[in-house]
Length: 251
Image 1 (cartoon, rainbow, N blue to C red):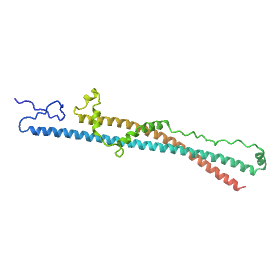
Image 2 (cartoon, helix red, strand yellow):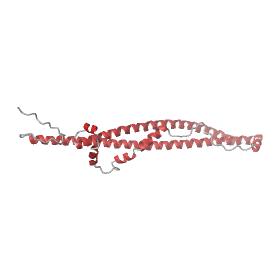
Image 3 (spheres, rainbow, N blue to C red):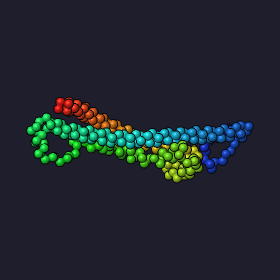
């Protein structure tokens, strides 16, 4: 009775001896085992490279999100300065209207002449609160900016030469519990660990991108309210300017 055939596991333990089966098919079995081993390594390496590229794209998206957030905050500050200028113009226009009314009335002119000048006051904000970027966006930006070194390491044009030996050395640092979950082959174990690490980083990156998106949404909504308020003020100011111009022409 013939013995059971030896399994062609391409990643059998290193301590096991490679005994080629007797007979004319022995050499073919060894070649098949080497081919399977190389094929598994090739697929694992391709998967690891794919996750690395995906992680690089994720860091790039995060960097663009931070840049967009910074630009949006600058836009909010510009809108706030514009609103303050409109409030100042509105206050100056009210002062001009008082002078025009005093010119039209002799008694009003005498009263204004002897009346003490009121102290200069800051322009009324007309319900405009101080501008501060929302805390959610600030926290998301700070968290994403901490990933800038990782972006530089993962960028094809910025990262250093790939030293795959370091990945294999890192695989030896895995705890004994985690080591049992990975294949015993050193190269394959390193690829599996790299894939798992990349997937963990991708999960964290997607969470940060979500926080950035929610912060951007909140900031855009707040600036939309600011734009609506500024539009109404500009329309009112335009009407007052036309009325003042008409009064000046009637003098």
